[in-house]
Image 1 (cartoon, helix red, strand yellow):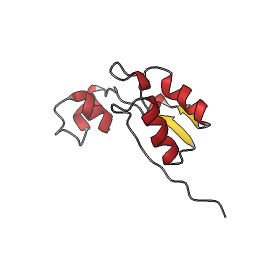
Image 2 (image 1 turned 60 degrees about the vertical axis):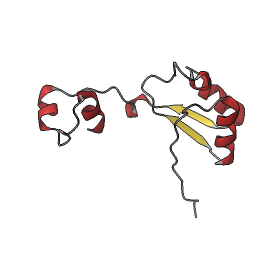
Image 3 (image 1 turned 45 degrees about the horizontal axis):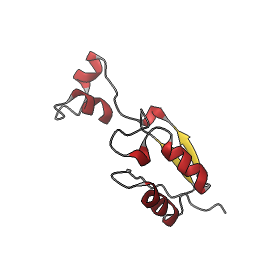
Image 4 (image 1 turned 90 degrees about the horizontal axis):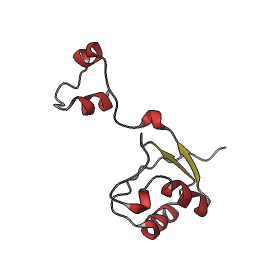
Length: 98
């Protein structure tokens, strides 16, 4: 019987490279699926473009980038009008919710 898969999410926040490594190892992460549309960070060097992928490789963690799941989405005018998430005032947030 196969082991159940556990899905965890994480944000890099302000964690530096060593702290992020400890968190990933402590949680026994086997695969990272990076869902950031533009994987990088202007504020955190540990999450700058390519850094999480490099860290994952060093830790023996599989790394996959899947931009389809990331943010910065848009809706057509018709989709926007039909969205059940009209309470979002920012169209980009409404598109991401969709």
